[in-house]
Image 1 (cartoon, rainbow, N blue to C red):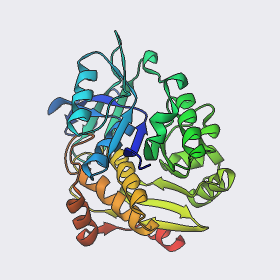
Image 2: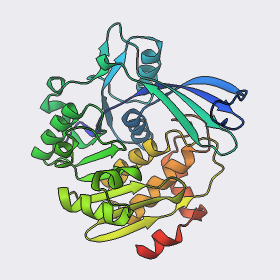
Image 3: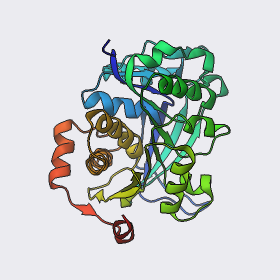
Amino acid sequence: MQPQFDVVGIGLNATDTMVLVPRFPAHAGKEPFIGEWPSPGGQVASAMVACAQLGLRTKYIGTVGDDWRGQMQMESLSGSGINLDHVQTRVGVANQSAYIVIDQSTGERTVFWRRPDELALRPEEIEPEMITCARLLHIDGHDTPAVEKAAKIARANGIPVTVDVDTIYHGFDRVLASVDYLVTSSEFPVRWTNRTDPFDALEAIQKEFGMKVAAMTLGAQGCLARMDGRFYYSPAFVVNCLDTTGAGDLFHGAFCYAVLQGMPMPETLQFSNAMAALNCTEYGARGKIGTLTEVEALVARGERRTNREFAQRS
């Protein structure tokens, strides 16, 4: 039977308060801010919005508070055409929030976040039919027991699993055992393996768990992946960067799309880099979610910034 959805995502959402400053102050310094505004975000939630924008049938599973932040998040996800049937609303709990300070001079951001413990998604809230209704599962690592259960259900049913992780969580090795596509921050493989060389770290983590692809995003340097015993490096696109918030989340959404489309790894990385780069041209975690046409146009004609060392070694 044809799955009802192309992708289901289980993980974090957040409602951000963006604060734009001319430059980030030195420690204990002061700086006037230019503006502030609320904006929906969160790792998996934003990735699912990107998937929906690219035309995938998309479902999101997670928790929200019942305050105005949670309402804003739900309105954003619903407005993107995402199925929310299994989002749990926690009564009397504030939604996950973040204050994101954007340095106007560079576009880089600094994040201060809070997630009440009551928002934790519990394993017993994950049922097999929530996972088997989709062609692909995308997760993060925050509620580790719940995503472990989801990943095991996916693995048992032949559904590929992609994961976005930048922090080492207790018990996360049990999640990685069911992951097919690991795409992490640049720091995660190094911390996990205690190997300072990113190539060595990716190779070690892939050999430890046997996932099909082990990859890391590199910010302005692009991304690096290992598949079938070889490395693939893809340079970042050069854009007028206003804000890097959410770039990694949209990279993952585009990566999910590319996997489902069966793109070869070089094209997958280029496509994902382009989606991330476009989001940097506006403010907010979902500031500029490119259409398929816009992403393909940037891939075809965009200027790229190559890290020579990564290029030479891949």
